[in-house]
Length: 278
Ligand code: NAI
Ligand code: 15L
Image (cartoon, rainbow, N blue to C red; front, top):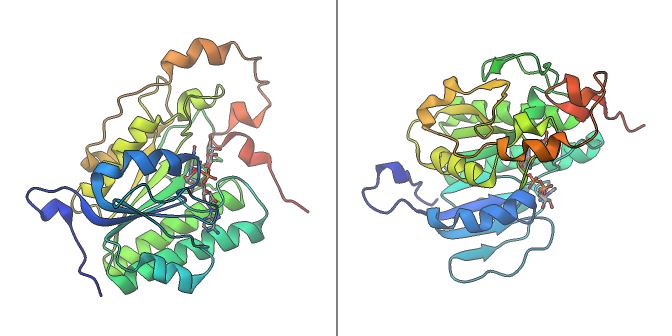
């Protein structure tokens, strides 16, 4: 079994020997493939979808279906920390979510336990709390209110993270990402937007802050009107540098959203009204 590494205890080099990035072919995975490079000697990149070949000795490409337990076990072997982005990232029929997200996150943690990995960063989502109204302000301790099968899977993932900390001491930061795109795409995202730069900083803090146990943090930039309070994750020392404000005029030039539209009512927006896919 490889020795687990806590780089916060090392003196000079703040890089993990081998950092696993799942979902590496996705929208955020493509960004993080570059921006996480300073934090690992080797980035092991994995996805079900095709990935471009390794760009040098600092990368490894290992295709894997997260629903395949044995494959995930082999994927995690030799890694020192995991940034887990892989899975279905929108509302989909339960059976799809079950395979990629529910079985997938369980397989990741089982493999982490078996191979002595001590730190996981879990890409959770605002859809864990999507049924709160936009008029409400909540922190990480608010009761979960998932807004669909996808939100349920992220809620399950957070519970798995807590269990694997309590039972096995594997530490996790669950980042309830708001909306991480190049720019906010609509009025709701003026509140939920997380820039790629702030996402990278938040992952860096999540990887290297000692003693995080299981921390839940909202992934948002320093937007003007926010619904989420990150005081419970202050120990991460995350300070967002970007804001949705420079995009306000462009977003507000869009047609107005009806007050009865879920996008104007719920924190989870349109996800609250999707399904049941019968
Ligand atoms: P994405 O859909 O672009 O990327 C997800 C990747 O996971 C895809 O490349 C896909 O091929 C892969 N994947 C799906 N099923 C898989 C399986 N069974 N085995 C292996 N890989 C599989 O999503 P995006 O935007 O890059 O998000 C990354 C993560 O962050 C996701 O977990 C998503 O739920 C979460 N997130 C993203 C937000 C955003 O605003 N981009 C907001 C909240 C959460
Ligand atoms: C998510 O969880 C999704 O992965 C992403 O595609 C966006 O829809 C985001 O939430 C959002 O709520 O804007």
